[in-house]
Length: 193
Image (cartoon, rainbow, N blue to C red; front, side, top):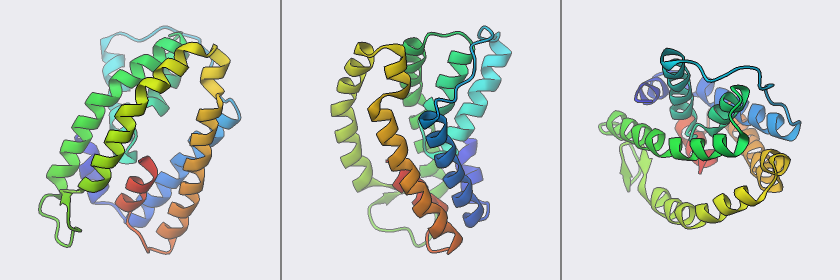
């Protein structure tokens, strides 16, 4: 996870923006088309879990996501019940967010030309407002998740709406990145909030 900010601050901004847009499309199509891996195995031993965690951490940090887009499909592929996979993914979101945030603060600390109210690459007004809204409404989502059946949880209306919103943001990100009008970090911040 701490590797992601290093990667995100060095490559071609256009390439990273396009990669992020591809991720948004991939996750939207995966949800809307109900594409999911078939549960065909068990969770791996410690080395396999460390490798899976490393991939999830790097992707989460690069894309500004909590890891659920990879960890939930991975766990359901390993025969973990969907409710348990979603709950575990929610728990994973906190350490992933802390590590990623610290990485983006450290790596952006001495970057010239950052807007006012930033701490490294973290834009504090958005962080504060979105955090308050997210923390106050997350219990509602958890309650709703426990009341849904497996199919409803995997493809429910909130999930579809979220994916459509991310898809629209992905279109804007891809077009802006191709026109080189916004940086990849701006695309990531706008779409992951």
